[in-house]
Length: 245
Image 1 (tube, rainbow, N blue to C red):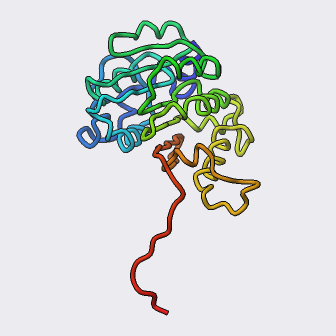
Image 2: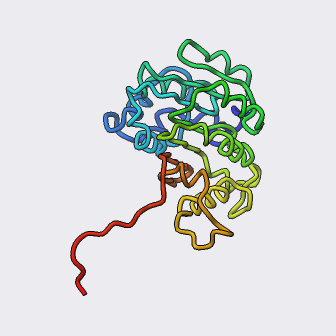
Image 3: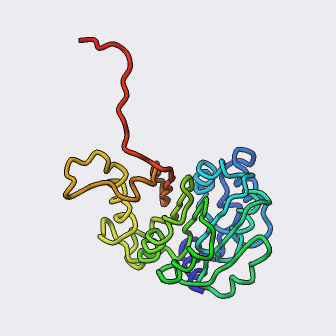
């Protein structure tokens, strides 16, 4: 119920599906799917489709493990299965018990609160390490932060973590506010420092950690943060050519 209310706050109950699709079919398979979809309801900001395809295309046809937080009416489950292909192993989380009805032989639905760290720890035991994790859950600050802190480690070493609808970090009723301490956007800004921590000259105050060693890059878009993982080590400077002086 909470997820339905939040979705209607974001998009309105009557927003048409075709109005959300801007990208021309053929340029991005997700755009084509969205234009022709007649199954279960799904609602996305139009620019998300390009972001998904940019970061997820390499997993198509590779039987990825996909973990999605937030089920709503189940349309995104159909979207991911179509996009990644028949080998996709899809796991999804929602706090609405009715979402369990969307479970089938290709999709495992788990009911729980993404802000409940005990529940998230249980997920780590029950779900294989995810190639892709999409946080499209409740969008409250405590939910997004808890999910990242508990599940980022559960993403595969070459996987992708995507948190969407970051605009709630600027909404007081979701626990956010412009530059408010404790918002997910402000939380994520500290991760930028950790990405660069190899270069710290103040080891007593700031040094590399598990995030530094596991993270290749971070991409910010309107309302979306994508983090790509890769085992990292301290960078080495390389040189070539003859000095001019």
